[in-house]
Image (cartoon, rainbow, N blue to C red; front, top):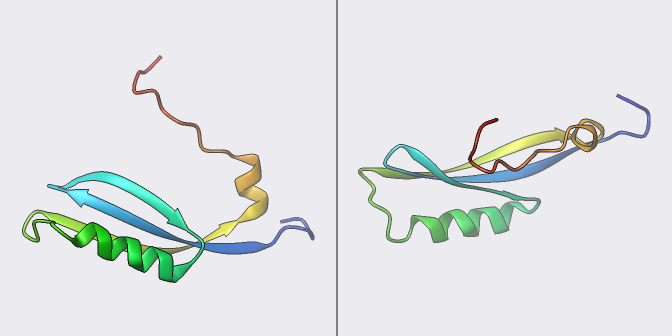
Length: 76
């Protein structure tokens, strides 16, 4: 890690329906992440669906050099 790099953290909210991850959302604010998780729980089937809230530390220097690409759904 370079001297100018610093660690930061994010909150990740995951919604799973019938065992299939349906959405992943990232928040820098814990309260907003908790509020979103609560919103997602409304109307869920507790026997089949689930949400999760995860605290993740991110190395900002690494994240700048390895951007996440968006999948188009097709494989080359």
